[in-house]
Length: 172
Image 1 (tube, helix red, strand yellow):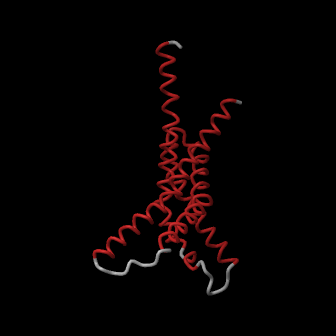
Image 2: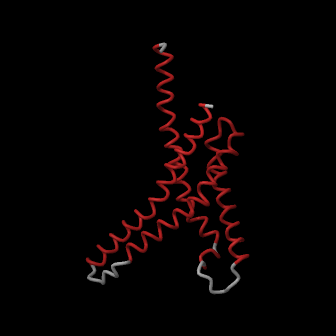
Image 3: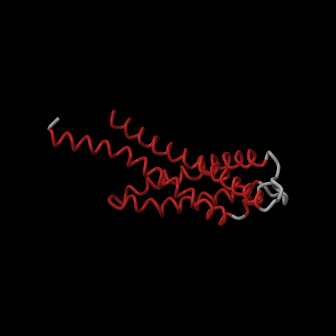
């Protein structure tokens, strides 16, 4: 019972950490781009733009990153972790292409789903007509999510291994 609880806790901790990084990275990137554009506008003596641009784009980036993390990245990496268990010692290496293929399937399935329900020519989600571009754009967040999850997993694994080494060395 305790091992199951620890295993489930490690799973949720690593995906929570990866989700936090995946969700906070885009608004920070928007802020950096905005600051760069403001500096560029000041240097070139151009207009600075409206006061609501930064909050709007940061909120938009935050909401979109929550959506793609929840519905695309988390399930892709989670399924890759489950499927890759069959590869034993190659498990980590197998997770990368499996999560990428799973993400592609999810993006194209979302494209088919949106197109089957929204047949109006002037729909607000016109970008969803290009699933290959969306998939290509999501490869970077997928990589960030996967690597963060693995770093958190390593951070949880190292103290356990150090403790086992201490136990075997000093017969604690």
